[in-house]
Length: 119
Length: 108
Image (spheres, each protein chain N blue to C red):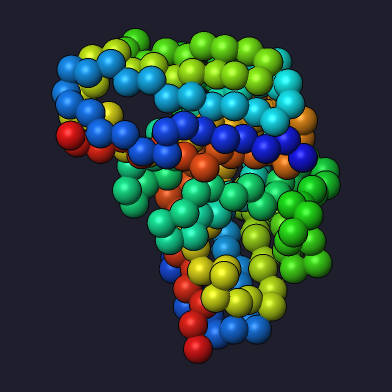
């Protein structure tokens, strides 16, 4: 079964960092770039960045540069999102998704990880 | 960066209605436009890719059209499971992969 499974919810204090994982299964891991998209409560979708599982190259949204790091582990078919210097504005559901160039879109999504930033 | 807008931001409709949602890009994006459906508490789901191609498994009552800067998502004969929020997204000039602000379809 082709799927992305994410780690569980997190509660963090302002100024802390959070790590969210996304484990791929059911397909060849290096086939598709994996992207991260977040959604603040009651808000729309915000693209955060992407990682190429094959070589590990990354590209980040300009407004998050300096605070976001995406990595991958090919031995476990997993990608990781680290976001640092958290503020309440980072409270959101974080999704990983595969970008399929054949459909020029995000055709598989993880279940989402709720990150709450609160003092 | 390319900006995406959608109209309306929300609409009320009844089962059986025909619903049309519009998406506009700040500059031409050819046919590099996708539509997603999101239900509360769930991840988005790809409905339409490349402006008018139906993703596998998506009912044929969903259709997309447009090119350049103006695009439309149409739902023919709205079904109870179609009440949701719909987002457009461009894959033409990337990164960033920009999403529209969303259109919520609720029960009239």
